[in-house]
Length: 562
Image (cartoon, rainbow, N blue to C red; front, side):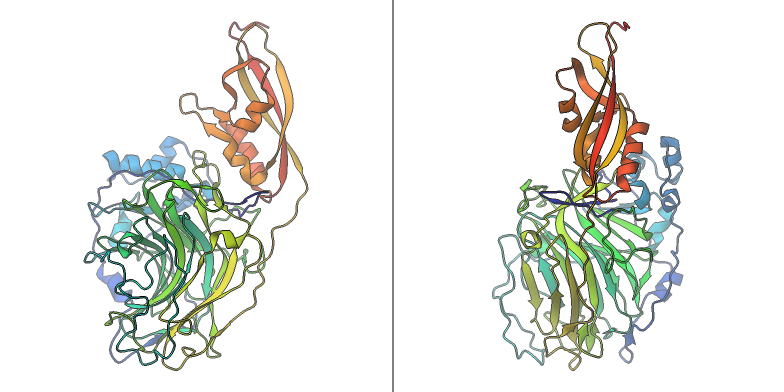
């Protein structure tokens, strides 16, 4: 993955998946007994505190993960789809897997909301997918902004209204069932990304309580029923599982084959796929050689450890395309995205002081560290699984950040923001309904805000061999022109695969450079190998690097003369 920028708009080009959806067919299996025994269980006489970061191996080997970084033919791709997956399910698997960037390949699970059917390229995963179907979520807006639990012993602070817009989620929802802190975008933003780490030994959950870290997409209806959440479930035994929830009715999908631990640098990428009717969440562990707290994640392509892909068909109200506040195409101009930390509490219709705390240390410091967190749009510019998909985000955080929502108040649920002034936010969050640990004070962040700025770069010159057809005459001329400068992060946008010919049709910067030379439709094009080589070279550069491409076009005449 790379984290890229360009002049007017910061472009964080991430090796993320863009895909289209179809129906799926494998029913979800039940959790095997061996896994059920390892899932955190609570009792009325015990509580659990995370202290050390355990190591977890996937319960099922990541079959498609073994293909990371490799060049695959159609036959190679099929070898990573189990033989039991047939018909339209197999077509969907091919489509999703083909569009996965090579360094982010991994087994996936797709949920069709209407039929509750699951499909995976690796059906052995399905026995580890816990699917919970609940009652319909109310679409009613809360009657009043300040709703306090009758069981709350510390409603000493009048709750101010959180950030509100025509597109923000209801705050609080009709039935919060726990405490939360949200950082919410303005209208029109449909995706987010972030690196998150929770220090070990700083979280403890009362029986039945669970912690969650996720991105929440609110559809154009603006109700709880239109929300979709994707990220991580933080269990009381310090294990962390990939998790996705859709509402209306509520469906929760948890991948218990993959587990992470406290103290690990984890990644969440989530949002809507433009024009595809699909929501996706990818989570994984950042390799130790990358530290987003000290290094700008830019000119590297990151291969996540233990990556997990969860998909769901999008709610009907994730619609209404337009542009967001940064001027970027959005699939839903009345949607919003939020980064959320929450403790889901049991046995309450609002919240209660039950002894839980999530990311609060003994010094009353918040320890849920979010690094390089931003809201934007995932572009639809992946090139046949060989490109980086581009995350478009304003270089000014104030463009995409709306404000916080703290429930029940900003003492119990906190986010300490450290905007860098360029690109992403950094934040230290924490939640406490402990009754004594940090739930009655404005806590301080556990660490310093030191998000680095992207590196400055010098221009780079590369070369590309291309072709074209003559619109007249019988000569076969060759033309060499310099195309650019093009930001390295933008190069992947400048070519589109033509399925009929297998060639890559080059975009406007190339076409405009060779205009007036008698080149007929489809204009200037190149072969896939040459294009992939150019993308590999630009992929090793910082996104702000200006690239000049010396392009040699060999023109073939209709009559084949010389």
